[in-house]
Image 1 (tube, rainbow, N blue to C red):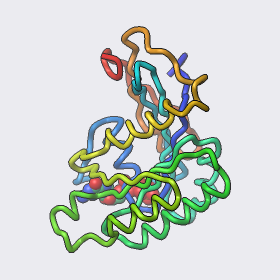
Image 2 (image 1 turned 45 degrees about the horizontal axis):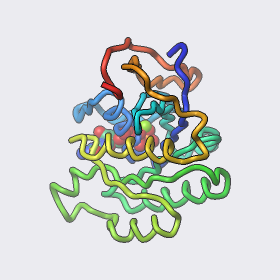
Image 3 (image 1 turned 180 degrees about the vertical axis):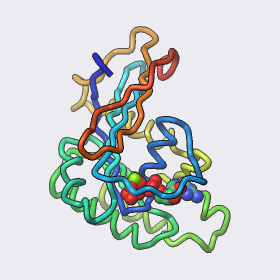
Image 4 (image 1 turned 90 degrees about the horizontal axis):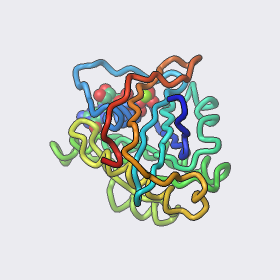
Length: 218
Ligand SMILES: Nc1nc2c(ncn2[C@@H]2O[C@H](COP(=O)(O)OP(=O)(O)OP(=O)(O)O)[C@@H](O)[C@H]2O)c(=O)[nH]1
Ligand SMILES: [Mg+2]
């Protein structure tokens, strides 16, 4: 990622097993492997992607944190300086929404400038079986209104609403006059960095997997 600036720090927070890593994997690499056994994130992982908004480039630097309460102190470090937080909850687990509220309070208390996006994950499961839904949509939108956040329900399995979520994040950032200085004018077709998540808690380096043409301005 030499030469590339991370303009918008985005942090993913939420209960363990809530679908954070799957969301980032779908967004950065357009993949979801249902056969792979669940692997909890240890520490945090980082990935980045450039997005075009209104002819300008925003680089989203995405921190995927560990949901396990064992790593709570560490996860708190990752929201520092974040411009946006995607607070995830599993639509099939009401306890995960309570945990989302915990993170919202943390953000409100410590990172006032951070925009909050409430993300209900695993939508495919509740579409398959309506009885599987444990988090009512209207309850979440009422809560979102209270805290001035947005709600989006996604499925990393099907990809539904995943790009839309991160586009909202990029738009929210780019269109905020406070961030004018950090958004670059998009003058030519840019390189599109493809990054992989580093799962090594000791080493948060971005692993560059190569670059391809196209992407946000093509
Ligand atoms: N059906 C379905 N399963 C999902 C979806 N997203 C995640 N999962 C599954 O839910 C489990 C947990 O997903 P992860 O993305 O690892 O959850 P996480 O929030 O990163 O968990 P931690 O790293 O422990 O905080 C995995 O078995 C995923 O395959 C989804 O959209 N649909
Ligand atoms: Mg994870």
